[in-house]
Image 1 (cartoon, rainbow, N blue to C red):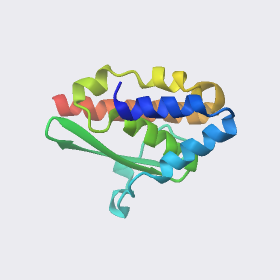
Image 2 (cartoon, rainbow, N blue to C red):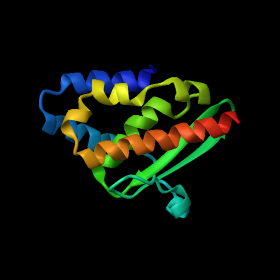
Image 3 (cartoon, rainbow, N blue to C red):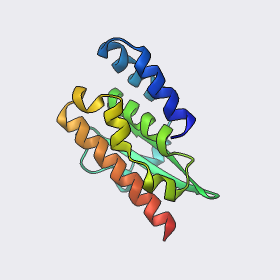
Image 4 (cartoon, rainbow, N blue to C red):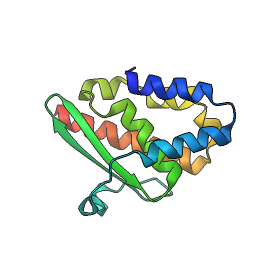
Amino acid sequence: MNERIERIIEDFELLDSWDDRYRYVIELGRKLPELPAADHVDANKVQGCASQVWLTSARKGNAIEFQGDSDAHIVKGLIAILFALYSGENPKTILETDANAVFNQLGLGEHLTPQRSNGFRSMVERMKRDAQAALA
């Protein structure tokens, strides 16, 4: 795993309560760069999320950079966690990295609603499809 996601895991371990962890996830989402309004289109929407989620990807050399947004604070934080894991990585690394293992390591599976967990998986699938397309 890269330094960004390791830092999030370490920070999570320092927080005692789930209220604090939720606040931390929300704060991660607030730090995301703003997704341009022009990218809030149906083609960028992630299907399978209860909230509105938009993701874009762009090839930068051998890496893929992701941008995204959501209309829900927690979901925007989940996007930030995924970006820490995947953004700036090469497509092969993205395809080989198990986001669900990180999700479970953080304990998010036990503390999010089933809809949010399904949305997380939908975002992972979308990012992996983008990585697969970059390899083709």
